[in-house]
Image (cartoon, rainbow, N blue to C red):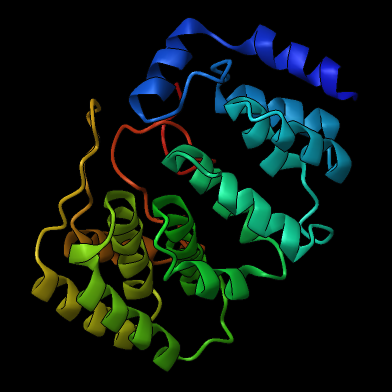
Length: 246
């Protein structure tokens, strides 16, 4: 498909109700309001198209950028392009969609380590979202790697920007679900931190309690495949399969 055709389909698929939902979650006015089910269906038709993904991202339109993360080629996206996209992040919804894409590239660990200390709220959030994926997907990392992340979370979470705190809490949960040793370490850290305060704006979202979420995840895990990434909160806009859809 060509760019103009895809943009026309996105515009047609957008709804006023979805635009209201996304706006409540911090998405700016440059959007059509397309549901994630419609975006995934369109991505399935397009398949992988790195060139089109770059064009879609360049429009600045929110829905086009989410679609770009679904059709971009994880093996063909150069690190410099990934960094440019990271610099364009402006809300948690696109930050999470972007992070999910980066988690499928060969650069996930390098970008996590580069972005976690970033002072930008959205780049920093992307880094900690990638830390969540590392905890769930990278079997080659030893416990010491995640123990260092737990120490950083404990020391920095209170002074980090709002949406970075939220992502750090998610990483804490994911690390706590990795193995029995890290479960004990993560729960101890979570108890010392106490409740994590996140401003969810004009939404019904709530910040997961790390100790409770870790325990419930472990209770559900028995006999099942690896769990999904920790949900950011209850009731937010869609981020892949992690949250409900408008």
